[in-house]
Image 1 (tube, one colour):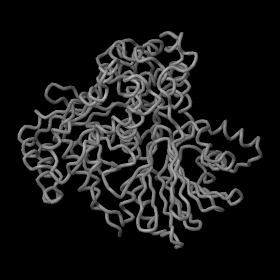
Image 2 (tube, rainbow, N blue to C red; image 1 turned 30 degrees about the vertical axis):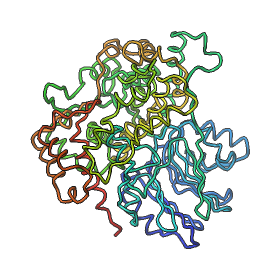
Image 3 (cartoon, helix red, strand yellow; image 1 turned 180 degrees about the vertical axis):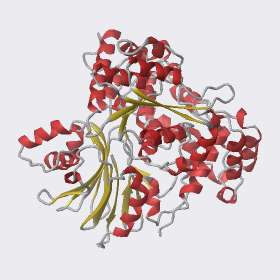
Image 4 (tube, rainbow, N blue to C red; image 1 turned 135 degrees about the vertical axis):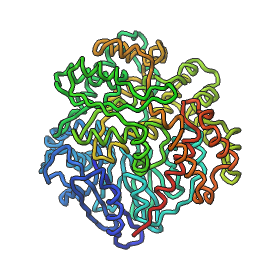
Length: 594
């Protein structure tokens, strides 16, 4: 796990190594164990290293292989790198390191762009072909690892975070109105290639982009799962799907233990993280380090789920760590939490993951986490209405959107209003081939868009702020492909995730499986009171916010007058949503090139 960046010149000039160094500075938390820069022709690469696999300097990056004519920077973990290495050795390749970076480099030389189809893992990389001068950018299938890029004059820069691009200078601070509409409607999600800034884009998940010496780009989507039954699935019943789900998940969990450092688990006490602990214990891994966090209760809404995480920790005899955060400490951490966000992320639990990651990083460098199960096994409340829906776009928007387009007209200042971009996004995704049923279309949209740009991005940003690598077994692409084939009825029964719950009964206690669905609660950011409300008021009434002019003053006044009455369908605070956006803009648009 690391941070990567680079600059490509298209005017024959030498890349600006000063810009690389400026981008590396905000990437330092992602890779506190070392750094490096290399240039070849019109391209330069920068890297910050977190030592997880092959702790020696043989795995130092940027990695250059003059014999093969390739240079690479890479962020992530390839879990099947040992198997790929053996295959490459049989083809005559020699290795000087024992890590996965060199395997990626030689796999690209051996199999070209199609090498990504052989990789099981999470990754973002940039490879320079010395002979052609082409640069290849790649991102893993589910978008677990981030990759942003922007064009500045006759050059292209890329980095693991958006603030790193801002640090190099030359990036316009103009807001992207399409992205703004998505943020305000699609629960804070801004789908790729958009970001809140017009000049900055992000590479979509499962995509390769080839950039030649003239600056021409060609992007290719290399992975797109098909939703619905595969040949031979027609006669399969619940027991068959349950058994295969458990078998594939076992492999996914075991794969994510590949490391030369200890691996822990983020244990919320819910089904998903509890199942990870149970499977690791089942495989013989004793005295696991597990971690939970809790907050104060607000308005009778509990701020922790310790009773369930304690139950699992006791059952499987883990070395369990409870982290309790009072409201005062959470407020003090907000500024740092927002500084850690590559993009504004509205979910209340960002500060929870931020503070939990800080504690976890003092004990381990790698953790497994349960993100993704709700999206691939249909655990959310908006999925049942879509099972047999005749108007899936309407039903999806009604349950998921924070606001419809009519309400948006009372929120945004007139100059920021445009078309109903978010509804059109859903329409376009639902119209794509490869998913016939409404429920499958919704699951595909959430897996390919919402998942990467909400829970997955949140975990990456908050863990990497503390040099902690988070691995997500439920997003093993083989498990995602299997889940896409399972009929919706087997997922939605019993309140959702039914087939996963039935698989879990063979591993963990029923008290955790049959409990009411919980979430990572931070009540103080849902019900804004006291110093939290004052912080929000100061932000939205600041001169910077007034000059930016994104929101209608009357709307801001209405929310500030009674914030607890304005809650989204997904149980978020509408006031916190607009305040978080302004807080992020004030934090990150203060970057200037030194």
